[in-house]
Length: 71
Image (cartoon, rainbow, N blue to C red; front, side, top):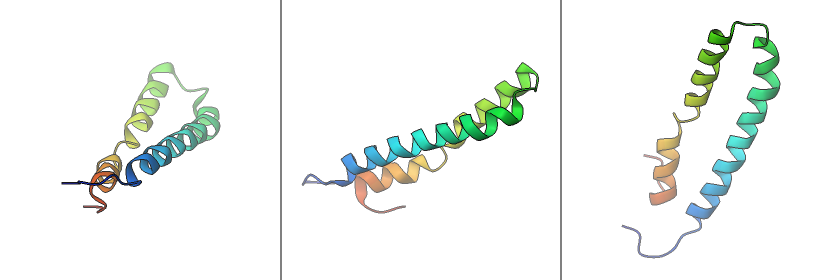
């Protein structure tokens, strides 16, 4: 258990925000034009999948923020 403050948590939060903004901009600028003519249900599925994909590396990132190790 951590007894002293560490910069990993505030830096990790800032990094997470930056990465999410960049990811959102990439999806909006690259994916949206490709699927704009698709049916609404297909777009919904694509956006749901893309909305969940960013969660996959989040567990290890949160572990790193708390412990300083990646696993």
